Amino acid sequence: MIPLAEAMTSFVRMRHLSRPGLSRAAFEAAQAKALTRWLTRDLPRVAAYAGAPPRLQDLPVTDKATLMAGFHRYNRPGLTAEAAWQALATGAMPRGLTVGCSTGTSGNHGLFVISEAERFRWLGAILAKTIPDLLARPQRVAVVLPRDTRLYHSARRLPWLSLRFFDVTEGPEIWRAELETYAPTVLLAPPRLLRHFAEEGFRLSPVRIFAAAETLDPPDRPVIEGHFGLRLDQIYMATEGLFAVTCRYGGLHLAEDSVVFEYEPAGNGLVAPLVTCFRRETQIMARYRMNDLLRLADSPCPCGSPLRHVAEIVGRMDDCFRLPGGRLITPDVLRNAVLNASRAITDFRLIQLSPTEAELILPPALPDRDAEAAARAVETLLPLRLTLTRAPLPLDPGRKLRRVECRLIRPPPAPPGP
Picture 1 (spheres, rainbow, N blue to C red):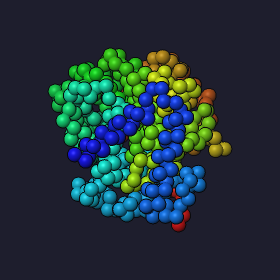
Picture 2 (cartoon, one colour):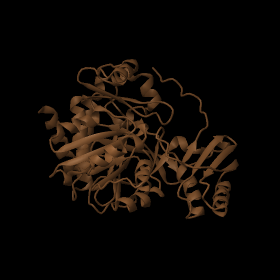
Picture 3 (cartoon, rainbow, N blue to C red):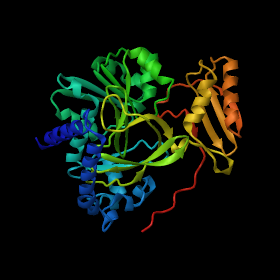
Picture 4 (cartoon, helix red, strand yellow):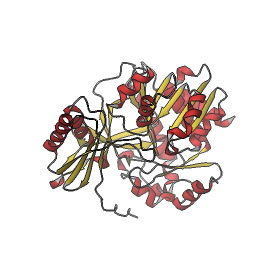
């Protein structure tokens, strides 16, 4: 019963800390107390932070390259990256631990390791943030993602919750009949899959739908919501943790009840977050630089939660176009230039191929005048040679959808310091 007790304790804590009416000052005091305890108790237990100062602002900024280069130094068991990959390959997990990895969208995979207690805390947190009002009756949850992990298996320990995983990389036609027969009440999938379900007329009638694992672009929302007759909510999560979930009022709230967010300005009103996951004990994530670009909301959410909310997850820092002189153009600026050129454009790909070349791909059925208008809009932003290509844009189960993508080869990161 200990794992389920962990889940319930986490559930209650997250509901309490995000409750409407709790003042921001009171929340920040509770967050600061939990952070201080973590900095003094858990941070020094890994080699990378032995003797580190117990103040967050005095810690160095880390990133995926730093973590992967010395993976064993950032987790309490001292598990090496090689041992973690071996556990994933064989399915033989170290005793009491769960190992997982990212899908490697950016070209390099990330690893995580958590304890059994942390696995069930994660379950309690995500239930508290997604479907607390649905837990009075049995629910069937379908998780449609590229990689299954034992994180999701923990939900199967709850008698009122059925969870089934569907592998995106197999292709939806492989498991369409099984998904429709399962008839999930809660559906979680990348936006490109949810849009595919809508366009292909999948017979599904969930009571709640969540987009996850990819950027939700504006053209996808009306297609998905129109088909299901529901508001599309979001879950912002990554290998590094659970970072934000949509509330019942539609606000995407940061998981500040378990993560401290710091923000690095990225231009155009965007920020890139540094995250410190102060409820993780096995693998330490402190001042970890995410690759995402966020636009923070200017006003409180009407739900009354003290947790800050995000107006938009714009995309990835890696997909900023790099122009001569070191200037960057963020994905949202490029995306909006294409979409604003014509309301007929509902899908596209814009790819930077080299420091001097880019390609805009539009569907063949799009009228020439609309395609040419989109090309002109892009050319006003980019001092690059732009090729306009007309080609189908089918669902690709094997990779995440990135409508704006930079394919420039970057030099490898510098090795971490001692």
